[in-house]
Image (cartoon, rainbow, N blue to C red; front, side, top):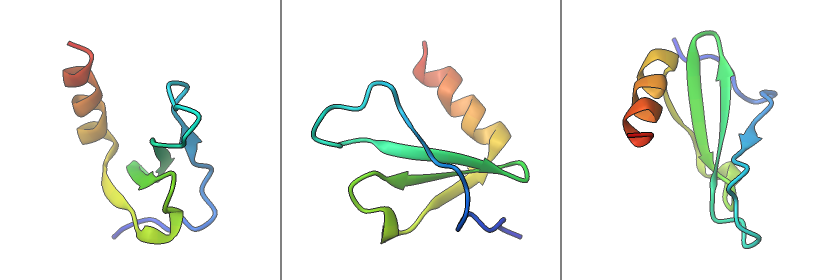
Length: 61
């Protein structure tokens, strides 16, 4: 079951450019939701917190 992210506190990367081309991430109940900063109503990509952590670890290589 996907947690309700409607009142989640989404964080934007500190690397966001002034034009807003970035994504925002929120965590709830062991899941991470990612959304487009420019189109917040456009939907979410939701994955497990573990999977998101693995993605970040790969990106840091």
